[in-house]
Image (cartoon, rainbow, N blue to C red; front, side):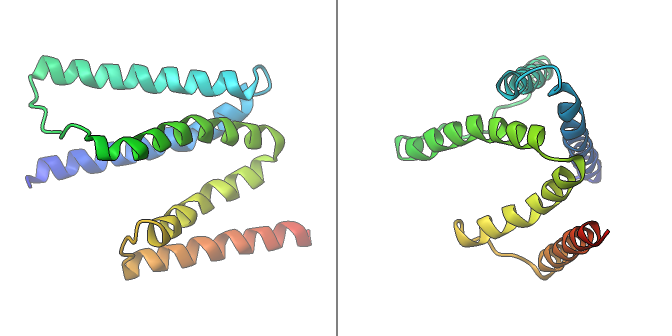
Length: 152
């Protein structure tokens, strides 16, 4: 792997994380003016516009498509993914509307831990020592903040 592609990958990962970090506070503000289901629709329109832009860039650059086609055996997983992917932002936005910014921030940080545990339990993913340490520190940070908040 070329170092320029590694640098590009790191840049894109940081950019995605920045957009994700900004989406919750902006969504919380916009939820004062629209219902969560409409807001989820706008989030999907934005994601679709971004994917269209990526597809256009790939077409202009004539980037080879190396992705495999979905098979019939993957159809149940694909349907489940689509259904969960529709319900997840709606649930997120209903929760975001009904909670404080501090609680939303804690839950957003703890989502990393939940995702890792789900990957371990359901998909039998290997969790490295580095990731276990990250899980431990995020859990401790969330617990310490929660404890302080309720103590005053």
